[in-house]
Length: 220
Image 1 (cartoon, rainbow, N blue to C red):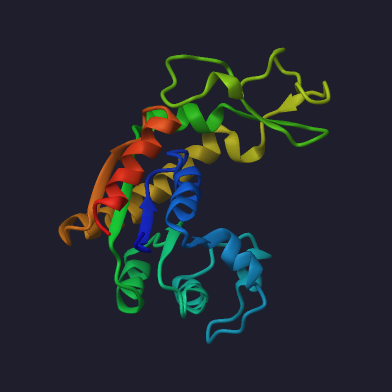
Image 2: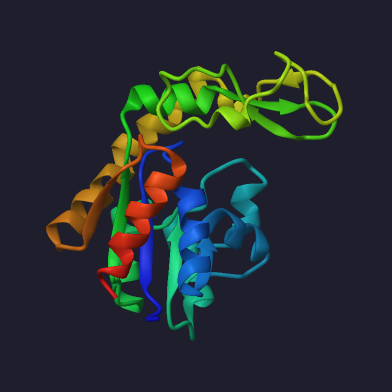
């Protein structure tokens, strides 16, 4: 099986991390989750400082630093799936110079679905188990098995479920604004280059995976 270079794009809560992980396993290539990569290389010295300097201040790591870290991670690879990168046109241009991309998979979901999914997250305040609430069939892509058996209570330890800070409507709206301002341009960049494959991310996770796998397999 060929080893592709693929990126997974889409709005927040579209399921990028889940599908990127499955792709990396399916095609036996490295998964480059940019958040994890930056944390794992936070002490890496670049011309513009270390990732840690920005992470500790709660700031986005700027493109030149992110690019250098990603470039180092990709050195010597024969294929990879990138999640969370490229996020900007500058990052897309940098990636274009260091890897021959086979496909950009765009997980397409409406902002209404994104908001409903992202704000449905609840976390057990004791054991950290994650859930989705409420079990609302109108929220596309939510899996009923992810919901707690008793409302507001962890199935594992019985402790209270709380909404994490990154699942509040205000936080998600900020993510969507950032996506519209920057990452939507990356989607168009790949569309114009003929590398974009769109997948309906409002299906069930398994249906999305079927389409994602087939889209990548058809390009390698």
